[in-house]
Length: 199
Image (cartoon, rainbow, N blue to C red; front, top):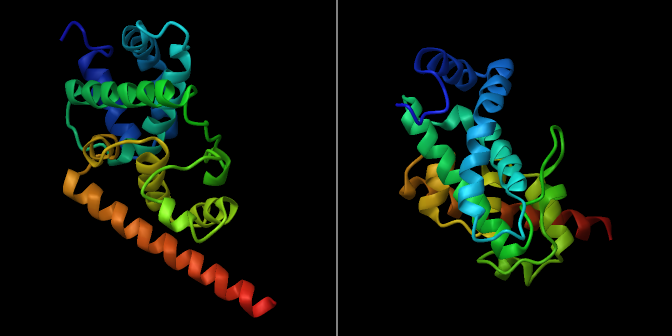
């Protein structure tokens, strides 16, 4: 227990309150976790001194804030394991792309964090549309659909990794991704129909 970044009793209470939608508790939880997350990120990024581990921490805290209510663990050890997974995934994204995933401020649309280049399973859809149209269509999807598409196609996460980050099974992650792509295609078809009707 000594390596856990939170004291057990207040830590569990903070976690429970944050999962129940208490924003103040979430902010306090993230603040308490930050120094420990920075140490973990420093260790993960040690072989890559050209990158700033603070970017990894900031992006990881964004994902935690957006998905804390989906975290299904019951203890601090499980929370730390979940956070470590998110940190490793964010570090991988930073190294692969030469920069972290673009941060999404409160109230911003998903369109603001989409990269310009896309080389993923979504490429077949993009072959039929412009990237701008796809970015706009994704931003109109439900938040759950946006998350699974962005993690899979823009952060190169496997379904197993997505499952750990978002708090459900690998099978569920795969199914949600497939359904999200179907909804994206329907959204694009709807946009085409509307454009055709206006021309």
